[in-house]
Length: 229
Image (tube, rainbow, N blue to C red; front, side, top):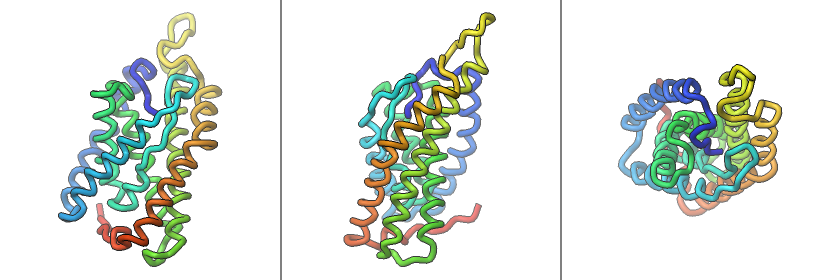
């Protein structure tokens, strides 16, 4: 799902940086306000967990990769704003040190994986597990469903961003300057692999960790403070 350099036009890259700047600012403010002393190390662990799981990349036709993210799990434990910070840190390190995802595309990659994914996953989880105790099996099911749908939503956004490039940036002869694949190719390429493979990986990992925490430390599933914006 990492978008490399050269696949999004400058206007698209700039747009997503502008979108993410206020999101990063808000996330930083909320995380400083809400995270307690016990949760701060968990934020670093969440970033490390997301970094590691995203390194298991499988190439997808069209110039990107497929993988799990782990962002829904971090959002469940620490909230979506903290997950946004954790995944952003992982993505920036991957781009700068490992060449996994382009530097110009950090804004777009963070929008897809550090914003869309954790927020969608968190609210799906909250909706399904509403008002049930920390040790309820419904939380395990909710975590798996949230992981699956959130990852696929992020993949869909990535496919749309790829597919729009031939419509936005092209030569006088109509040849695409950046990603050469239109929506009819980019969306099926991204969505298909994640629907069939990577979404299930995200779902299983998220559900299993929640199940483990229910047995070992269920307090972690209910210690996050709700934040009013």
